[in-house]
Image 1 (cartoon, rainbow, N blue to C red):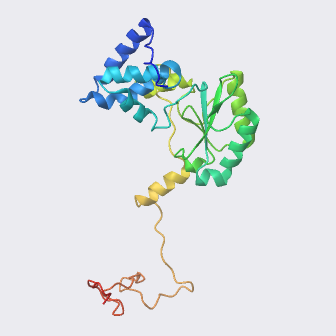
Image 2 (cartoon, rainbow, N blue to C red):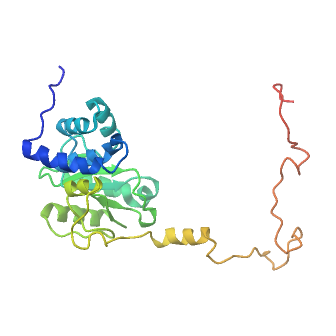
Image 3 (cartoon, one colour):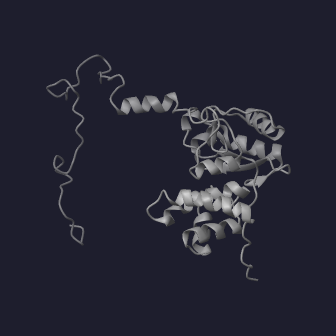
Amino acid sequence: MPQLPAPDYPADVRARLDADAREVISRYPDSRSALLPLLHLVQAEEGHVTRTGIRFCAESLGLTTAEVTAVSTFYSMYRRKPSGDYQVGVCTNTLCAVMGGDAIFDELKQHLGVGNNETTDDGKVTLEHIECNAACDFAPVVMVNWEFFDNQTPESAKRLVDDLRAGRPVEPTRGAPLCTYKDTARILAGFPDERPGAVEATGGAGPASLIGLRLAKGEGPQHRVVHPRGEAPQDASPSGTPNTTQPTSASDPEHPAGPVTEEGE
């Protein structure tokens, strides 16, 4: 059966969201570009994108609910059903997986009694696997509301979710202090994080990434190519640098360049 039109927010909530939406929309020359932050805004209100939230975004931007739904269901950061105060994401992509990410995810599913994208009975934790947390030099990585918890083990991950459920203080490895998922969604909508020290807290790349960056910039040690017995290679160039030219169609008569006919001649 066709669904009835989604209900509107209560008047006071609608007035507050209208004011926030106007501020968001004013940042863009084309109002349609404000759809992504507006979806975060309505997610901050209810913890996931509801039909009411979709209606609000559509009315605010002059779009159809079908257009808003198409976007909200495309991106995994927008939740389609009620979820926990803390989104616990375990990276199960290649490097984190081989470093223990798969084991962490399996342990947490058993420990919490939930599957992927499911929420504990107390409404505190939603567990999900994430394809990549972009922190390979800290693998395996777990994220809580998009804050990093690096170099995890099954045991440390279980302690982490136990602390979250018990309301005990939890500190990310780097980055801003932890807040609830609704608070995170409001920040992602583009509103300032007003907690003392939250903006100043940060965390950069790890040593492995920084070494690669220095080498890419030519700042690392310049290694010389040395013959195994300390002798200059016979094919060394006049400057003493080994000749590493690879055969090409111009220097390899057996593989001349030129167009190939349809018959392969």
